[in-house]
Length: 260
View 1 (spheres, rainbow, N blue to C red):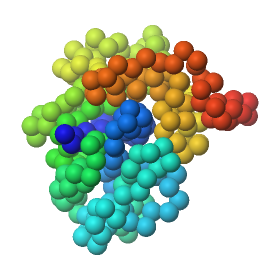
View 2: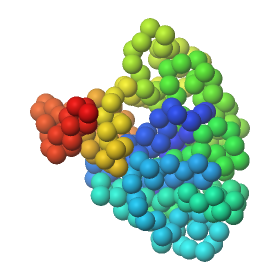
View 3: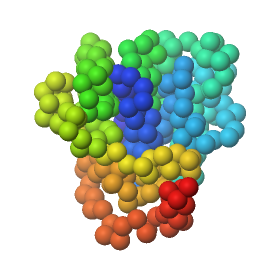
View 4: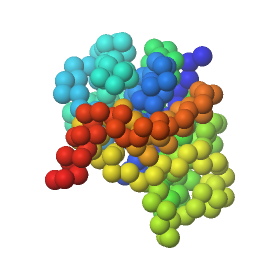
């Protein structure tokens, strides 16, 4: 059965795009076909995390009717299929957000799982992207401002009748000032489906232009995203006992970056 999941947040900078990329790569790692779409048209940055130097056909081209969805699909070395949005200001101005949901629904036919990185906040862009998915996950940090912003996204989804899979609580450092899971769930009215720890491997994976779950498969953040993916698939997942050495060359690069 084909399924599309939107990743949304009340504001930028909370780990939304990292979550979309990491979850897509984790699901793909379990042997499932995954399509990852950058639907953040006004400020696309999936490109910067995955490092595609040449994007001849973008989501903008498909929305404008200049190209087919199939022509926009690329494949990342990690194995996930991708559709990028254009970083051109001219292309952004010429793109009609009203067609976004329709295009996402059509693109979702190309893979078993489609992960959509939506725009942050309650904009026309984010609302239209929501209309194209089966359900959404809301990304938030464990602080009052972020959770309050997330609540607004939840309310917008409720008005549209879109199912909410739960809260992805990211960048958790277990500091005394952070909200705990119970408080986040009480405030939002939704379950926290995964807690993602603050983890420096995310930064180094971005430098490698690779999903962290692919570059550093045994890091704490990767294990968390893999557990989420496994639960979505109804599979069991046990972290490797060998630890970070299984990452091979990526481990060596990570240590080199740390030394700088």
